[in-house]
Image 1 (cartoon, rainbow, N blue to C red):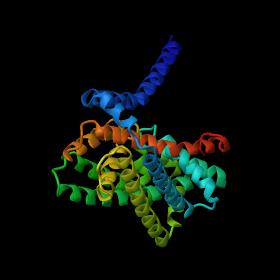
Image 2 (cartoon, rainbow, N blue to C red; image 1 turned 180 degrees about the vertical axis):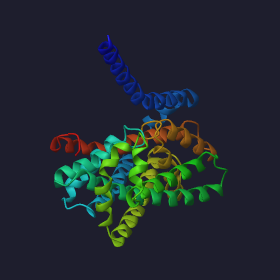
Image 3 (cartoon, rainbow, N blue to C red; image 1 turned 90 degrees about the horizontal axis):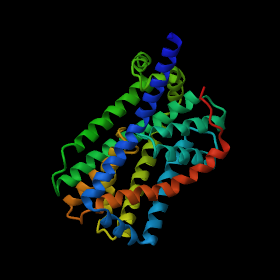
Image 4 (cartoon, helix red, strand yellow; image 1 turned 120 degrees about the vertical axis):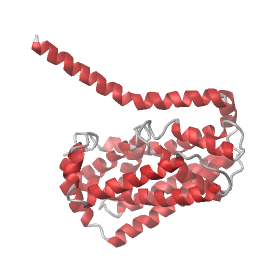
Length: 320
């Protein structure tokens, strides 16, 4: 009787874990459906069918240059050839597009470690350092963006939560990578305790990175921000939206910060809602903000699908 009860409990736990995993996807789709009803699905379809393919293609190439600069950043901490790093990075990005909080990008660590025959924990630590630098630049760009838009209209107060959440993530990663007390701290957090066993190797790997290398990472992140602005600009031209390059450059930090909130895959629904609100404050037609974000996702995915080539070379196993 007790064995049957144990099996029943195990099945219940497994079922609850499965439900927990799909809740963010359901939430994101639910938000999108509400948005479609609010702005009118026909408005979105009409705008999409009027897309200028030439400018849409230029936007995709701009996004490609973002990822090439990100690959150069990874090259600073890896001995692999550029092409191998690029494919690992793109596959990690592809997986991050379909996971809450973009945690699927951890695959990049696994892939590089596998190809380089290096420990997963070392590579994870180095990748976490790159992400920490990137979030630091996001905080800076987000502050500049909020100041910029505040001259034109009053931004919703919840956007300031994006800054606070970004600062929290930055401090958390910095603490994990550089504090000796982080092992005890991680072991008490259910979502992060799986990484506690990797911590020593992660911290040792990070200590090998020089200040000059970190400075190069900062420069490459700034270059990436420029090309993201260019992608947004070409996307706006492809949808016949009258936005200047500077506005597009300032718009990207606001949107990307929301995409890291782990309640839906890459902020699905949340980012579209925020962009629709910002576009309405700029007196743009209803539905333009939602359409712009959906086309941004599609534009980025076209390049990220290159990462599927990496799955042919990497056989996924549990990392050691």
